[in-house]
Image (tube, rainbow over all chains, first blue to last red):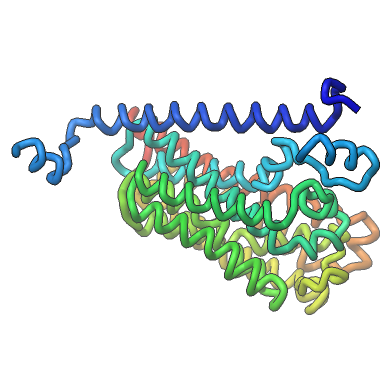
Length: 56
Length: 315
């Protein structure tokens, strides 16, 4: 039997890959949104360790 | 899975390739909806506020943490699930996902959810989420569930933590209000579950899980429902006098508690002959009422919080 034949397993595997892909894209978007939200806060401060590194 | 295994699966000898929905089913989506709703109310009712994106991320990671608990519970209870009709079609007993896959999936999601909640919100919220997962998986699933008929009483604490976590996301701490929201769900769980146990014909006994209806009998279960409902009432009313309560909440709480107390009283006064005669009508009614009861209380808290900016909120 060739791989070209559409099998129920292929549909399930495609659904799983598509679902996982969408979850990963959503996760990236969420991390991006969180970063923007946190950096945009009024009380946002650059951590001390990075300040020291930058001052030097 | 290779093409060779595809051929094998066609002959019924190979393994099943799980779909996305099978993994989603491991997260117990129906339980997750209650987690999302109560955590959201806890977050909105808390004093102060968070950026909407932070709030969204926090609720999402709380939901994922709850889902991870569900997956780990299904991994541990796979032997029970195989025996009981209600759970025989879950992904593991049905053979769509292996036990080790479910374990890895649950552990990974638990770790991700706790770490991400810590990064998105704070360590108190992350710590509470980690404790909730530990409590549900280790204390309830591994220890209490097969050991004592009071399993649902103490195990119910796991389902009661989400509003406390939502509150901690905003405030970074624990307060009397968040503890009372916890107690509301904690005290509500036993009468809710036992009302269901009275009319649901389950095969817990076959699976070796001690349920109050079996170990202590139905008469005792009816008494337990009444006692826990009486103990639940002051907790529900006390919330009305805190900073998240108010006239709307108090009116809703008084009405719902009167109705629930009446329902518990009706259940206590009945015996099995009466219940069988009308196909457990009262028990079914009280179970439906219990769902409305919890939803109503949290909806009232939400309404108080939403109306507060317009001067229509709390006291």
